Length: 329
Ligand code: TYM
Image (cartoon, rainbow, N blue to C red):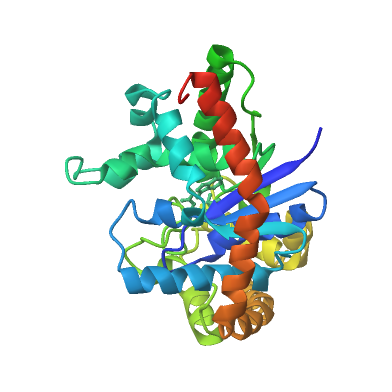
């Protein structure tokens, strides 16, 4: 079967190593074995919460620069901005009418994000998973590389697609979430029981891709550790397990090899070397990012070309879905 990859990230300011290891790094690895890859800057998802227009536009360019700096190759993959293709919102409506309130009410991310302010969050935030389903289904994606927090949304996509196919005939390919062991859920440095998040109360929760060497050293130094000692991955040691996962992602070493390397060493030694490893890992990406971001004309061209490359596929999917539902003349 043809392997088609789709994934995306919101252009909402901070991109942290959770996003990077959980998503972007996997995309770069997967784009070489896929028949076709589509990577999207999901600006329509970003506006489900308030955004400053000037910052949003800038963040779209920043995200595109980061995709490229990370190694997404616009010759091999299509890189585009979600709002540049009207088919995303069009299919989203068609799917909304085939998704139940009950299904959306069960989405844990919505529950978390709307906690204690249910009446004032946007209807877009509630419908967000349906727009995500539209993103994936438009291009017939077979594989969707994401972090674990998006798994439930990909499962909803599968349910909606299967139900639609059963009701209207074979319109959609059923996608599979691809979630990697060591990067499924990078946890907060200040609280290893909750995922690393850009909306955390303190910036000590995350390492941003743009953090300086000093910031990285200081944040790793401050990262909470577990009681006891020993550099081992264990469910009773969530803080060290998280730091080991980050080390594994930044070096490509296996967890076992990391445990062996640091056998008999203390948390302090391990943290110091983890900071060095992360700084060395991020530096070339940061340099490339800063270089690419300077040429907005070139970035605009890449994003426009990406959008043109996939226009035909998106249009064909929407036409066939409308036809199946009985819309139009
Ligand atoms: P977003 O922008 O919140 O996050 C982008 C990607 O980063 C992953 N991620 C993490 N992975 C590991 N540890 C963490 N702490 C961590 N935090 C975030 C997310 O799982 C995600 O893969 N709705 C999506 C974007 C989207 C999308 C799509 C993804 C829109 N349409 C279609 C896949 C397919 C989102 O808001 O991700």
